[in-house]
Length: 538
Image (cartoon, rainbow, N blue to C red):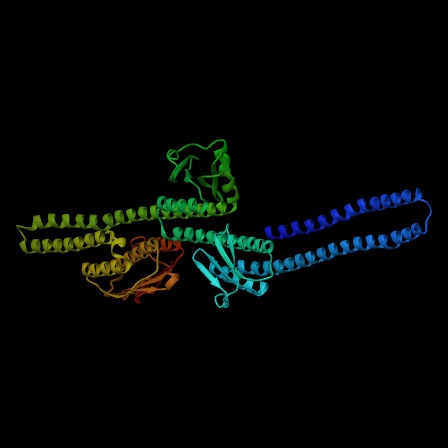
């Protein structure tokens, strides 16, 4: 890390300076002494013999020589002492940073940024024995003694990469070590911020997957979140059709992404691996067992390459969302087709046969009008009763198909309105047990409401019930559970007849619930009523 490199760079500086001085002394002093001795002897050689020359030689060799040696050794020992002190300081700094790095490493594994900040401050207090205060993105944490240490100097350290500020009350520490310490803390906080941002983006993507069933709106929301996370200037999502054509489904600041095309060249490669189709245009494959489409981002190529691993993870999330949405759409189409077939079957088996029956009765009444008026009136009365029954059945079918504005009224109020109107329409008693609120996404609310509609419709049509109990339970963050029970004739769930199911039937209701990650079951027995249970997560 940056701080370790700084410490390693400091040690060679101390060694090189000492080595340079020793080399200089080793080269210069022998030559200087040799020149001095030769010069002295040469000078003495030309002087007349005298006693004072003998004493001069003794003084030179007995005093000046040892003095020069002593001065040299003293100078070297002073340099060695300074080097030892520098090494001791470096060793202490390394030990402190090593211990601090171990504590900071544990701090960065915390669940959120606030806990990381607390861990950093506590690590500084434990390892550095210093009172500290750290502020980052609105979070602030300090040791208990920081604000009570009056009169002591405070060292202010800016953390440029993370955007934070560290204040320390500490003595006997040089500026170089504090710079290294600030770089170490800055890198830890920057990594914690990046991890928090990644987790937040994943959480937002997961929330979007749960909250939106419309594929076009879902892709638009996911694309916005990915662009904001990656710092891109624009982007688009293309999906493949059965013929291998890429169609644009969502785009942000990319007007050129408004047409469909057959992929070739770099675009064909982008269906399998992340590829820069242009200098600053990255295409990431949306892949789920087989190619689904392509996520395109415009931005700085170097930055997008650095963020590639997480972008690929987000692309897999988008591909999963597309597959789920397409499966949901296919289930919707299947349900619509099943409903059309049911309506056609009901018209053929119910209304069409009733109309044919009434036509025959009216023909018979017409022929009996003159010779048996009483019987003719009885036949006409029977036609009236049949007609009224068919009118009620048509109204009930139309009411069951009538949409309810969940966004306007909310799930709870919509259930109340629908149950009250349904009870009046079919002449049944419906008891409601509803919470004040439930935690469900809009898409899950629609599924819950559709299950209620189908269950009530089946009860009114097939069960001969007099009373229905509807209960909606809030499971908090786990979602909600719906139960619809009646006191009707019931049936054998192991062998239900197609006419006994009505609407989407049990299989279609189960598919819609399980497509949202929920569970569905039916409990019934002949002459013991029926209970339908549907549980959906948030």
